[in-house]
Image (cartoon, rainbow, N blue to C red):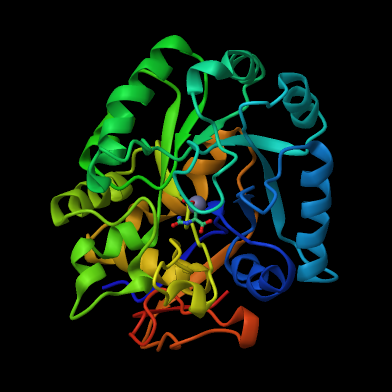
Amino acid sequence: MTDRLTIRRPDDWHVHLRDGAMLEAVAQHSARQFARAIIMPNLTPPVTSIEAATAYRQRIMAALGEGATFTPLMTCYLTDGTDPAELERGHAEGVFTACKLYPAHATTNSAHGVTDIRALTGVLETMQRIGMPLLIHGEVTDKSIDIFDREAVFVERVLTPLVRDYPGLKIVLEHITTAEAAAFVAEADHPIAATITPQHLLINRNALFDGGLRPHAYCLPVLKREKHRLAVRQAAVSGSPRFFLGTDSAPHVVGAKESGCGCAGIFNAPFALEAYVRVFDEEGALDTFEGFASEHGARFYGLPLNEGTVTLVRDDVEVPASIGTGETAVVPFLAGTNAGWRFEG
Ligand code: NCD
Ligand code: ZN
């Protein structure tokens, strides 16, 4: 049995660092484990310009303080009014690594999202031409579609025609949760990849109703039934370069989660690698963990692999019931349980 695992320093290809006091509180957790991260742009207002992304990147570095080695990779939030020229300039200047597509009203702070992807022709043509990845929250927003089916229906109705119409467009289907999404990404004759979160690997939808309503297990896309968790697990540990780590760490203060209308989002950054390595260990696949955590994402984005390493050690580690105080008190993923592994740095 392997009790110590040393891998190349990993990256997080999908994280919400928030802003203001929450940013100050949470950024260190991501920077402790990851060298780089794709920073989600769903602030209020969303990050839609080079100027806003540059300022946000500066606030992230200021929150981390002097000497931080973490690199935030910024994204542009697509709207119906996105100007392709702004994207191209932002990409050329090294400000925008990618663009994020939220279907309007799909999730937290997505009211400004795209109402009809077919209206984005100029934007998508430009991104395809310059090799800028499109990161997709892959759920339809049609309220008549059962919430547990919204990802699979998105794959069929939106993603399938999208890859046909833009054969060269680099796409990352974010936080996949279903067998349908995993199969599509694994098999498509297209430059497409997917990120996978720790929660979608470790728990299924029963966790939402385990002895009562569990708001801290609620995120979007919502947890699915067991057969989907198993399919997503197989994709993660398969060694396929199309699947890589993206935590979707999405902190909300305790009061916003424990509410009559609780926010979607799970704060998993503090014990992210511990949670992932547990999955690979349980699957007898520790040999494919480094690819998933530290190589596949960088290669897909066309970025160099990180220097340096991190080490994880099998150990009993109690995840605290809550992290932070006052306006930044957040309940972390796996709160009150044994993480089973320790991040040594
Ligand atoms: C995210 C958030 O809170 O910003 N929530 C979530 O449940 N994942 C938004 C998102 O990525 O969908
Ligand atoms: Zn997210």
